[in-house]
Image 1 (spheres, rainbow, N blue to C red):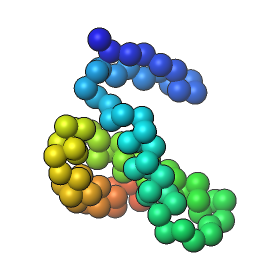
Image 2: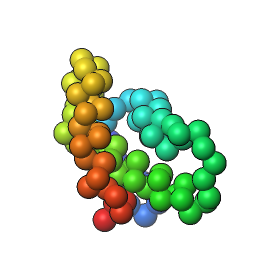
Image 3: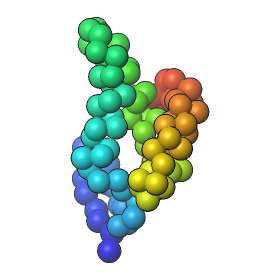
Image 4: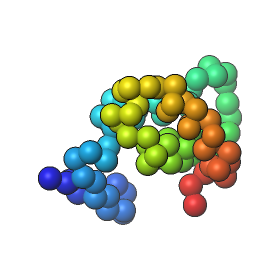
Length: 91
């Protein structure tokens, strides 16, 4: 059975197999955003956050969680390939 939740003013409907576990999504996003460990200005940090979240969303659409568990290298390869498409964040 799918779920419906409100995120800001957008409604998101997802089926049971559409999402990675929230902890996995969080860790993947955090690793991308904070991975360099360098201090960033607020604007640079927000732009990086937007790029990382855009890339993560795009990658999760192409690599299921089941596939991710089998091979995180396939996930990382797809993530790197999709990253340039999110250079300006989500549209």
